Length: 226
Image: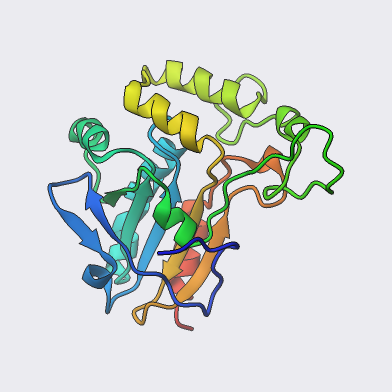
């Protein structure tokens, strides 16, 4: 699996993968899902409260998608032992896969924000070559839970405290190595071809943690193959 420099688009072939599951012992591979359509979301680790909320939303959408013949898969940037501990107490019908190195995120071209060095004469291009000032100026409140829009890192801290979620050593290591990983959703048809792509915050850091709604996902699944 190699790095894909841009998000894969409808009509392109979805890359294969095989990842450990958080729901149970074992792995799930692309081959296990072949022959039927599936939605796959690539997320930051459990340290991201917005990603935890999106996985919960996928759980609410899963029965509708399954009735339409579409499986639901979430790939989280968390070590499998940590993820299994968390989801043992918060079971979900979504197939949860663990990729602590973001290799599968990269294979599907889900960007991670990169920052230009101070004093660079290069033209900023979010998210592939942003300025730190661009990111520092961002203010978000995508779920409406905050009293006012906050910087993304501050928003994470506030919501983690609200959720009584304490980052452990594994979470902090993932945060240190993959803090700027973005989130992506892809619908893959029964032939392994991508039919729909949605990438977080391509228009700028003020759109961080805005993910597709349940209605948008269901509508996209309904048009798959049409």
